[in-house]
Image 1 (cartoon, one colour):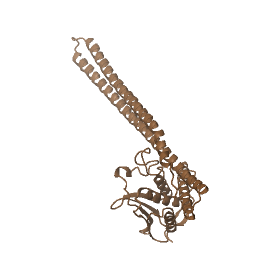
Image 2: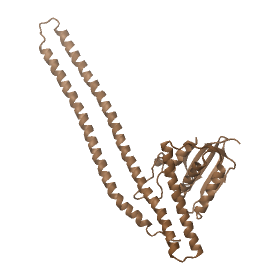
Image 3: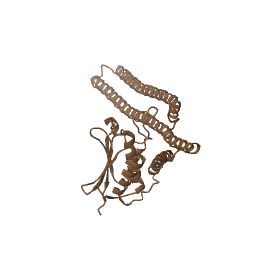
Image 4: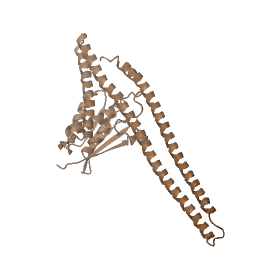
Length: 348
């Protein structure tokens, strides 16, 4: 089978272009962080100085009025006590106002800081997505082009031609899945996608997807444990994309010689429970809460070798939600991950 000699060089060139951008972005974050903390310190210092100035003024007013009192006045003691009480109440007023302002400042500062961090985080995720999508789009096109040029320029045997065509077909299917993920995500998020739900045999859909993956990845072992005739209400194209993304995720992260197991069962007569299990490295506990976030992928895109865009699992969650289902992640034994999806079951 023909190989793509420029694939590694493409990723190296991509990393070389991105590293200066990452360096600039890091410096920009440090500058904004420094400016933020400097302004916050300045505002808090100004508030403290405001309190000190008012308290000093309050003290001066007290002594000014105290000096105007006559000691031979029979109400002298009462007036002194009244001045002390007024000074004390004024001090309490300044403390209360100062603490209120400080609380509002800290709440606002926390909100601004959180917004800034989220903005940089989203920008970083989107940058990772752009890096990944650039690679993921160009690679299938380059592979297919190289295979077709090889077919045109070389005199190959039928077996060699078949392998090149199968490889090209596999790359086009991969490209189709990628574009489907992007378009479906955009439609679901914009609210332009109206779910075209009808009664579907989920057992048949899963069986068809497993058969397709066996053809796409003949070197991989796929195991299917199927309960027949499990019907749900949903949209077939979205459900096919959901199952395809989960299987593709297992193929990417599980070692080549380990099996990928798909199980569909009737759960208490109420739900159709779909389990996709692999024996890969698994997902760290610290990342489980974020694994379904949009664009999220573990590590940095400039050094990552695993294919993907960070949309697959996010889209799985959105599709599951659109169908009134629930998606969960658990650890497999002895290692790996199990994705479980529960759909409301129709009774036939």
